[in-house]
Structures are given as C-alpha cells and as structure tokens.
Image (tube, rainbow, N blue to C red; front, top):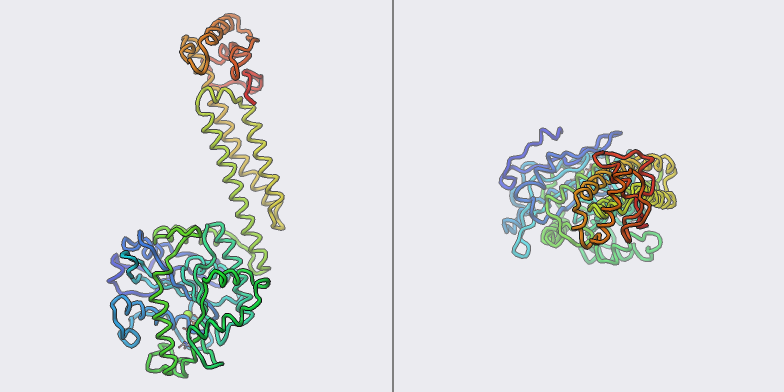
Length: 504
Ligand SMILES: Nc1nc2c(ncn2[C@@H]2O[C@H](COP(=O)(O)OP(=O)(O)OP(=O)(O)O)[C@@H](O)[C@H]2O)c(=O)[nH]1
Ligand SMILES: [Mg+2]
C-alpha cells in the first residue's frame, strides 16, 4: 500500500481504525518510513503531548502474531469502554492481516491507526499497537530483517517476543544478537535496547501447566548460567525487565483459519489468552516510553526519535548479513565519529565565545588560534585512529578529516576577519583618545603611553618596540594600528608578525 493512500481523518479516536504501514520493507530494497503515518499517529493533537506506550509484537514467522494483535485491539477497546465481555464482543471491521499457511503475511511494520487512551495518575496515556514482519531468526534478507527488528525494539516500550513451542537456544542466540544491535544504536540515541520484554510461548505442550507462573519457571530454567554467553539477556532478566507466558495449542480450527473466532478456540486456550491479553492491556500504562535516563517521551518526541532512527538505519548499509559483529563495529564507529565532530564543534564554539570581546580577541593572534585549532584537530584525529574499529577505517578517516578541516578553516577565516576588524576598531579608539577611558583594562597611565607611542608611530609608521600594556598588549601596536586603520584585512605575512604580546 502506498503511504500517501493511507489517509486518516483528524479525529483518530472516533474514526474507523485500521492497520497502517509505518515502515515498508521490500525484498532487496531498503526499509522506508512512511512519515505521513508517523505524523498522523504520533503527532496527532490528542497524542503529541501525551506519554505513549507502544506495544510491539515480533518473533518467528507464521506463529500467530497478527492474530494476537487483533485480540489485543479487542482487549484495549474493552479496557477503554470498561466492557468485561470484550473477548466475545464486537470486533473491529478492519484488522491486522492474519492467514493460515506457510507464506509470510505481514511485511514491514504496521501500526494500529488509533491510539487507545487510558488513564494514568489522573493523566492520559496513548497506547499504540505495532505488528512486525518476520522473525528474529535471520531470514532471507538479513539486512532488512535486522533493521526492522532494531526499529521495532527501539520504538516500543513493551516488546512481545513470540516464540513457538518453547524458548530455544537459537531464540536466545538471535535475541542476544539483536539486543547487541539495538544497544549500539540505542546508545547513540540514548535509548535502552528494550524497555520491557515479554516472552510469549505459543503451543506450549509439556508439562501441561500454562500462564504466567509456569512461564516464569520456564524462563528461569532456560536462562540458567547464561551470564557469560548472553550477557545482554542476562542484564534484562537481572533488572526484572522481562516476563514469560505460556499459551497452549489453540485448537485445530484456529490453527487453520484466518479469523480465529473465540468459539473455535479450545477452552483452555480461550481462558489463557483472555488472561494474557487482560494482563498486557492493564499494565500498558506502566510501560510508557522513556529515554534511558528515565525521562518520559511524548508522542511528538517519539515521532522525532523514530524519524532520526529510521534515517540513520536507511542511509547506511551495515552489512548485517556478513557478520553480526560488523554491525556493532559500524555503529560503534558512527557514534565515535559523531562524538568527535561534536567535540570539535563545541571547542570552536568555546573559542568563538571566549574571544568575542575586542581585548580578548586581541590577546589571541590568528596564528595562535590556528595552532589551538590544529592541536585540537590533531588530538581528535589521533584519538579516533586509536578507537575506530571498522576494517575500512582509513577511508572513513579521510572523509572525516575533510569534513572537520572545513569546520576549522571556516572558523579560522572568520576569526581572522574579526581580529582584523577589531584591530581596526581599536585603531579608531586610540586615534580618538578614548582608550584612556578604558580604565580597568588599560590603565590611564598606560593609555597615555599608548597614545604617545601611537602618535609617534602614526607619524613615522615605524614599529613601536616597547611593551606598553602589561599582561596583554605589547610591542608593535603603533605600527599595526597605524597601518591597519581603515583597512578590512591584513596581509597574511603581516598577520604572522608578533603584533601583540600573546597570552600563551
Ligand atoms: N498453532 C497455532 N496457530 C495459531 C496460533 N494463533 C493463531 N494461529 C494461526 O496461525 C496462522 C498464522 O497466523 P498469523 O497471525 O497470520 O501469523 P503471523 O505470525 O502474523 O504471520 P506472519 O506475519 O506471516 O509472520 C493463522 O491461521 C492463525 O489463526 C497459535 O497460538 N498456535
Ligand atoms: Mg502477521
């Protein structure tokens, strides 16, 4: 579906709701965010300034994820309207697409167009449901798959990980890899890789105990002694950010139908599904989306983050398929480059601010400023050369050096112009005898000396050799003032002469 065709009326809560494709993922093409959908959902006036909870379902292909989401819609509607009969009540006309068979149905990331507005501490929380294509196990197009998983993990605040029959070592292995990716990207954006992780086991069969408690036992059993092998999963468990739930087989009718009605479900499945959905819906307000520092994100802020995140993911080929370690390496390097550029920009800004006043500026010659910037530049480059990890780091360094040299050169040029302009202005002040009034900066006696010397210099055009201003302005002032007065710029060779006694 074309994103432009996915129009939504302005009152999203009263409109006919439907799934909208938030991220498109075509085979052998990159993922692409649908900005209109993002805007209409998260920047909607009813959502933009509210805390949001995004419940996202992902996991193995063909394991009833979309089916589950359709019941989550009903559960959320029931919670909003306080209707206890939500499981058998009216169903949304449009639903997440669900079908039997081997062929994968959901493509990309889909979001339920309307938020469910729930109460939280006297305020409101907008809850959205998101369906994710495919699996956490590497499929045909691993690059696209990894990007989708990373997006789903980072944008959601409650991640449901759907697995079939039991939590297997391969599930843990894949999860660890994706957590690694999401962690690297998340660090860059100050987001946790996963806020709350909910393992949902489908078709659990042995022992025949189901639900939350049995799920916790299963989770404990399969995650014993994993701290070395799967440190990221271990951390999530240790921080009590994860839970597990076991669902029984739903019955043959559900397993082979496309609309899985309650009357088709085995009775135990019906009950456990009901309890699970109730639990997820009623805990939604506890899982509002936050920054890693704990700050709550509004819909508008989350939209900004998703835009930046998808831009970062799409503009780059990570080479996910070659090795998962290489993803981490690329992202690590991206973070380092971004931080290095920011360090240089901050340094330049600091130099700019601290030399804004005429006297501060006159104490720092353009040559000194050039050296300062070049030293900083060298230190940053040296540090980067030691910390970058990518195999192609020499090309990355070349590109980066060009980029930051431009920042340095632009500032140097503007600093030189400013310096010369201020020198000219100072010449004017001296000429008008106003320098004497500068009191605290240049003492009256000193100013008088400057005036005398400057007058002599003006007359002769010669360099004044004596140091006339303690701690700052020194030899050569008369010559400079005399010659620079009325000029916009100073030739480079003149600029290199020690016109003032520099403070460094
Ligand atoms: N065995 C089994 N089948 C289920 C379960 N829940 C739903 N189904 C059925 O599984 C089939 C696939 O369901 P979907 O919801 O389309 O699965 P999906 O995971 O979204 O599939 P993709 O989006 O293609 O990855 C449908 O016929 C569902 O009715 C379950 O718990 N166990
Ligand atoms: Mg699906």
